[in-house]
Length: 388
Image 1 (cartoon, rainbow, N blue to C red):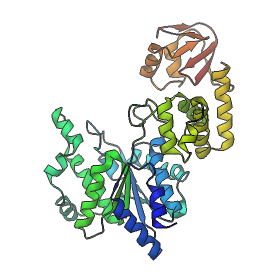
Image 2: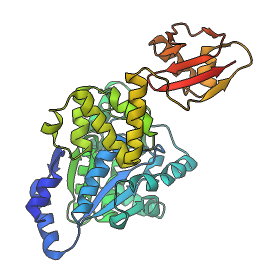
Image 3: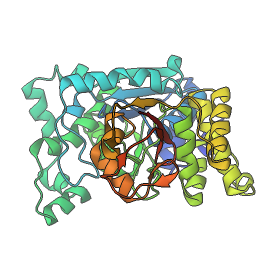
Image 4: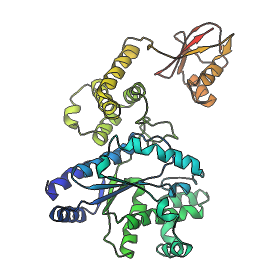
């Protein structure tokens, strides 16, 4: 495919290119020299599971691979110790080396559900930062000023609210920028919240005598609440390693407007064609597409059938877990001790919102006591069979 054809394909879903002319030039040169571009994207292993928000970037990376280019999948095992301050209203809590290693170890199996292993270089920035001398480190720090870093919007918001900014957070953008220098990146992909860091990467490459990377900014995917960026910590995420039933149910719960955005950012489907479908049918199709990609078509169809059985026919799914008790017990204790919910706070919130029922009756009192065997339903997709 010629450079213009590649450019047109790559621009879909992209909010900003810095700059389009530079990317066109790089693609043209790549075609002439038969040299693939080096496309960088960084992921700090702050959590073990990747979610659909991450796949917006991963899918764009796969587009580059399908056009013959090389992806530099950077795992920030060094920078994760600091924590990216982008979009944060307070300092991130420190992570242990054990947590970082454990989270990073899960990434390979997940990202290769999307990326082509043969066109992917998986790199770890601890490999170069751990070997950097204090002299090299201080030399790197000379490439940015305090006034430049403090001007970023998230830091300005913290200052207005009189919240502290730690020195290690100041240096994070420079470390991310140096990754681009070390890897000689031709282009870096990131969400809109990464613009400051990616621009600094261009500046640093110029300072080090390299050609500046092109910046491709992609939209942030809202979580299932339709308000906040998808995040595991906010509980509004859809993990690619979650069960097909869980993924199907979560997708069916999103708003129609958000569903169309998911189509645009997560699939190659023709949006005008999708909008001709009934919203329920369109959501079911979206759920099947996503589950098929990360599990299988058969698992997607099974999840669809299970959803229809539970929600259309008001049936209880088969194979639900059992929880045995010897005597009467408060429903709050059953919810948490059985693992049906993750915490007592979540259990209380579900009860207060009318999301818990026993024997088909909503429970409004967290002190409600279960006196007989029966089915507990928590939320829209979790069931538990209590046996006394």
